[in-house]
Amino acid sequence: MLLHVPAVLDADQIAHVRAALDRAEWTDGKETVGEQGARVKRNLQLPESSPERHRLGTVVLDALARSPLYHAAALPLRTLPPRFNRYEGGGHYGFHVDGAVMALPGGSQMRSDVSCTLFLSEPDEYDGGELVVNDTYGEHEIKLPAGDLILYPSSSLHRVMPVTRGTRIASFFWVQSLIREDRRRRMLFELDASIMDLTRSGADPASLLRLTSVYHNLLREWSET
Image (cartoon, rainbow, N blue to C red; front, side):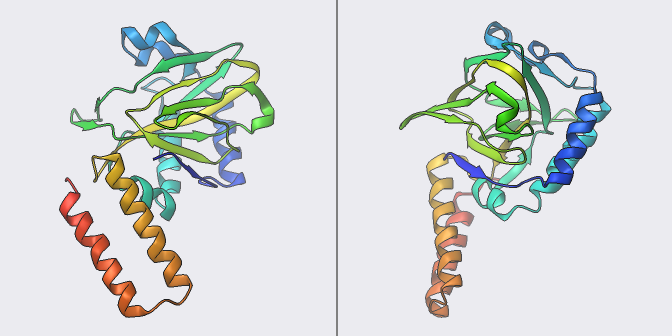
């Protein structure tokens, strides 16, 4: 499922994060990928040990906690602390697939089910830099307003197009979902959205209760903890 989640960060939060990133020390993005990824990756990232990375990551996670749409779509169980990257001067990231298993702080591990990019630069601040996600319906080019997030299956082949003018800044992270399979996450998301729509339209309460029961029983049957 490819889903646009608007306004995760508001204007004040974006300004705060961008000001901190403008002062930050960046490092070569190849340091956080394996050999294959390093061959096609040309960008900058906040170092893994950067205090700013941890502080700003908390800002992102707190904002996500207030987004019902994000939670309905991702059904998060574990989240890798957000990272931050910077593309400029032709920087790009060629087609790749995200690693299936990632290390969490403290030594535990998580499976990557959902990949997320939170845009921090406005589209008119740079040329190029589109996130291109390849799925069964073809290639999708994504370039969102600052503060908006795109989520998609981590199994998807994807790339970032070269930035030929300006600077593209974003946060990115991965989620292990309660629901491993994308098709099941999509069904639950669509069922949840339908329940919300019917509730707003004043549908019969007894029918809504039955649908809600179906949703939670499916979640109970399919979820992994």
